[in-house]
Amino acid sequence: MSTTVYAVVAVKSLDRAKSRLAAVLPPAGRARLVLAMLADTLAAVEQAGNVAATTVVTPDPRVADLARRHGAHVLDEPIAAAADSLELLNTALAHAAHDVRDRHGPVHLLALQPDLPSLRPDELDEMLCAATDERNSVVVDHHGTGTAALVWRTAAEPLRPQFGPDSARRHLDAAAVELTGTWPGLRLDVDTPDDLDLAVQLGVGPATREALTAIDWRRASALDRPLR
View 1: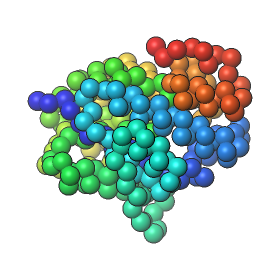
View 2: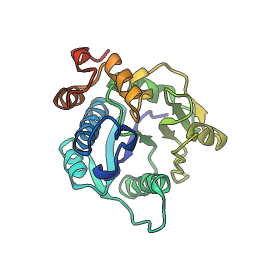
View 3: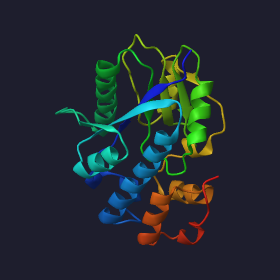
View 4: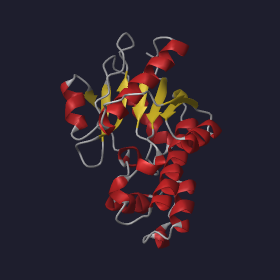
């Protein structure tokens, strides 16, 4: 069975992104950090041998421009008049997956978080090689409750993401298999100041390192730590 997948990534408007960092970063700093973490995430995905292509769905032209520079196909966020942010996220990922299969056929999919500044290509490839079962599988985040990545191997079924609070349990309850490899960079999606400190300790990619230096992040003295 092929290990190749097509990645889908959803990114909200930068003026609404990373609200849990608002206490420590102003809007301009948060926007810069979001773009930088996305750049490092997409760079790792680009270098992974088992990802055929990436689609990014976003309403933000700055995100769209960055995604195109990394070779991603870009879609506008679907209009969902009454949806909350989590419904919109899952709708956006499903929309991207539908578009991918319209263009490429019944391919396997990878729904990935956009804020993985410590992700390494070899982690992603190792995880996708482990996810060779014909069932869907999930990588639980470093908190043990969220979903860092969802691998959708059931090519006959549309992607049904359930990201949000306690999403790992919901994906597992929907018959996904948990992948238990270490993959620290893959599991470390950044939402809070503590998450960002952990990413710095692990080692972040060059775009995130540059952004954190520019915004004078309090752990900037550790930013020379390379990705491990």
